[in-house]
Image (cartoon, rainbow, N blue to C red; front, top):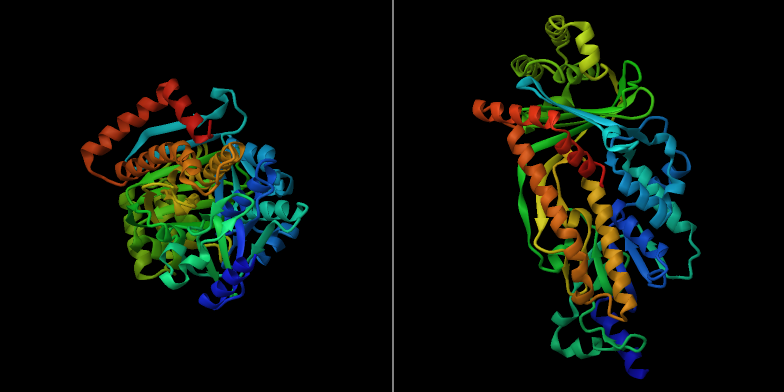
Length: 489
């Protein structure tokens, strides 16, 4: 007992902080992945006893405010969630009870087509595989708010700690502490019989230090947890940006379809929200992304609609005009003249409903990249979500992958607890990797190849991909398999 007190005191002096507290699980990151993992741990009868701390650098009050009183307009961070993810949130976590369902839009199909060949089209209809919903569009903050509300609704015996507005200053490996003090950290947890010598120590901006049995990185692409664990992440930047915006349609599109056009500058997607609302994700070159952010707000809606229809030669001419002057309203006449060559009935039947307004402040851009960690675990460390992998947004699978990670990690910890094992040991964590890594790797590869295949105007490849899209559209078995993948089944 005396030695334990002495150890705490020496540790406090060593790290210039209050005495080190100990936790079973420390989660870095309060985004959807981190909150999903915390909620799932506390919802499971086998893991709810674990003492858990979640650390988030930003203030979560905005998430709480949204949960209590969401704004009139949709926010611009909107994701596609699969029926599998929805079922996970309903049955495994229970946070779906707190979702603002009036802001969730289910859709039943996808229409994807090639800008280089108007006849190269794939149309997915989920009814062909006996389902009602292919996926649903939902704001990220809506998911975060529901998870936080669920966590805060639980009876807290002191085993749930959320520290927002708190930054991680340093993560220390006790094995690398100088020899003079190393033996003082080599205490034994009498309840588990495990040595604490290798438990990571997380130093926080509020002066606290936490030593944890398991450290989970849900801290994004530049994950400090991944760097601490010395896990390599491989991938590349696409030299491209995704531009997002929340828009208003001329009228509600009752077809409940997500639209995607593959342009050589990158895919443009118009995704349905409730009523006459929609969200766009336009993958584009750095130069074009700057134009899209700067163009006059009264020109932008017509530009997006035109980009779903016009030939790329025409679009490049319009981009050139807008690069010189983002407020050049003469482009509206250029667009109208070019669209007048199309039959109105053809446009109405085969293309999205025209966009008439962009919500002020909703336009933003983010760099596109692909990365995948060599593994998701190290001794006493696990990676979840973007800390483990980042994916091109063309398939809309980023959040779903993070939710699947969280579910697989909880399952691994449940098995470890059933067998009386240390939850931080690689013997427990390796089953998480074996269940999550291979499927994620396949999906990352597919999205990367699709991006490269469609972001080119090299004629032989254009012909080949056109044949491929037409073949997929007429081979029901392949389309059914793709729809099951998209819907998470």
